[in-house]
Amino acid sequence: MIATLGRWKGMDRWFLIAATALASIAGIRGLMVLQNGKRSSWTLWWMIAALICQFGYLVIRGGMRGACPLRSIGEISVYLAWSLTLFYLLVGPMYRISLLGVFTAPVVVLFQGFALLPGRLAANPEKILNTNPWGETHSAMSVLAYGALALAAVAGVMFLVLDRQLKEHQLKGGLFRNLPPVRELLVSLERLLWIGMILLTIGLVAGLLMPHGHGARAHLIAAVAVWAGYIALIAVKRVRGITGRRFALGAVALFVLSLGVFAFV
Amino acid sequence: MELACLGLNHKTAPVEVRERFAVGNTKLGEAALQLLEISSAAEGVVISTCNRTEFYLAAEDVREAVRRLEIGLADKVHGHDGLYYRHESAQAARHLCKVVSGLDSMLLGETEIFGQVKQAYQAAHEAGATGPTLNKLFQKVFGVGKKVRTQTSIQEGSTSIGNVAVELAEKIFGHLKDSEVMVLGAGEMSRLTAKALVSRGAKSVIVANRTYEHALELAAEMNGRAVRFDDWLSVLKDVDVVISSTGAPHTLIHAKEIESVRRARKFRPLFLIDIAVPRDIEHACGEIEEVYLYDIDALEQLADEARARRSQQIAECEKIIEAELVKLL
Image 1: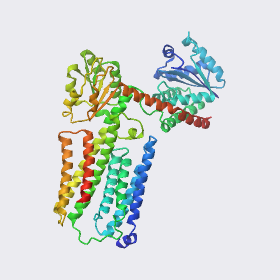
Image 2 (image 1 turned 60 degrees about the vertical axis):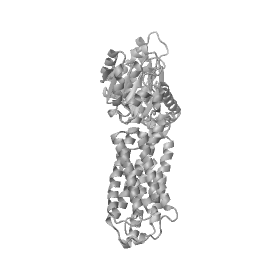
Image 3 (image 1 turned 120 degrees about the horizontal axis):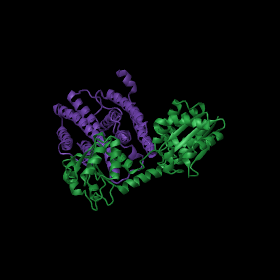
Image 4 (image 1 turned 180 degrees about the horizontal axis):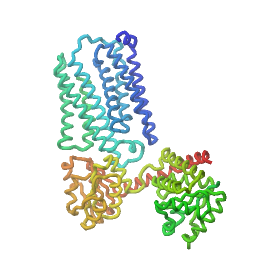
């Protein structure tokens, strides 16, 4: 197995480039079809192909690292893009949320494009010799959670677009016709937040149990703050109620904020 | 065997004539057999809807068959000239394609006609009034109708106020089976719009009207419940759609009233349809975040736009029909 992976060493970047190209095709083709007032039935298949390439990248990169490839900002970005694609493929077709792929693809391209920038992914990454199961669980679950929360933010953006169109009576065009109903978007958004929160809670607990090095305190405080923010948003929605616009804006703002926080902490 | 069509529709005949030609759904097979008897044609189909009655014939001498048919129908026409249109061969097939595709309908692109023609053909077929010529024609025409509807936008968008309201409600709430509708005012416009929502599965209808008896009548018709007019605000927290069409000379629903129930509604989306003139709903209601307000002008404009979009599709539909006719003939 290791010998087989050895032959593929260095191919991780090509798998990532292929995944980025496929997600780009999904987004661009989806938008072009949408301009003609229709919905592309191919978006799903392009994204499945992108997921397969992402998986190829993760296997090779994981083999090179000897651990879950989550050690640099570039690796985290790709893992996040993979998680986002995975959740899109699980949630989109199951709940028949049309256009979710068209909105998700650019975010996947953005994360992977960031990882492909020079210096983000080392060609010969350092092998991890001592792995800690709590540390691995923390990293994997947290980034997986952010995949779900990213998709919640995507659903939030879709809601905001539709809400604006309905409010301003701008109901022409393929985008309006093909966007899912307001209520379905809000239900999906809440469902994704719950999934994200469950995974994030597991990741957070694992993070508290893992051995801490220098600088871990600030990271954990940031993680707890983000977690508390999401809990507050869900609690307000459940208990008091919140307008769809504020709920969607909250999901988008919290996701962008959490990305910003973890980029620096 | 030659093909011909003799017909009249909303463009050529007034309703008092059209109703004399109307054939009930259960009598279409019988009417097709009568058509063969009167015209001496070999095959026949009778299509009858509220806007048209058309006779399709296949005969060796189709002109003679049509002439006999016109003589047979003479007593229904009395006092009116130029009621019929007559098409032969390719022209008859072309006309049927247009009818099935909704291009000849009063409401351009409407979908009901497809099922009505299918029903008429099936009835004639079961009665033994069709043969190889009409069987081939109708089977092909149904294929053309489907192609026109799937490859163009001829049936997209709603062209009546009731349907625009339904389309918007579905865009906000998805399926309407969990949605409650409140109707303010028991007039005809409210009734039609509420009926359109109920036909698409709305969970229940609550009717409030100044004259309580009218509210009771409309509620009974919609299988809903009536409330006293002064109580409409108390039920607002439970409803998702409000249709307002009272004859009040001033606004009835104000932003402050909506604000008062927002917490109780947990800020759920609320769709307000104001089809009254003068308007019943204060414009400021639409500025509340979760409220989507549409008045009669907005709804009418959407219906107009849909009609214009459908009209732009006619040339595209005709192109498909011509291409398919080449294969058929």
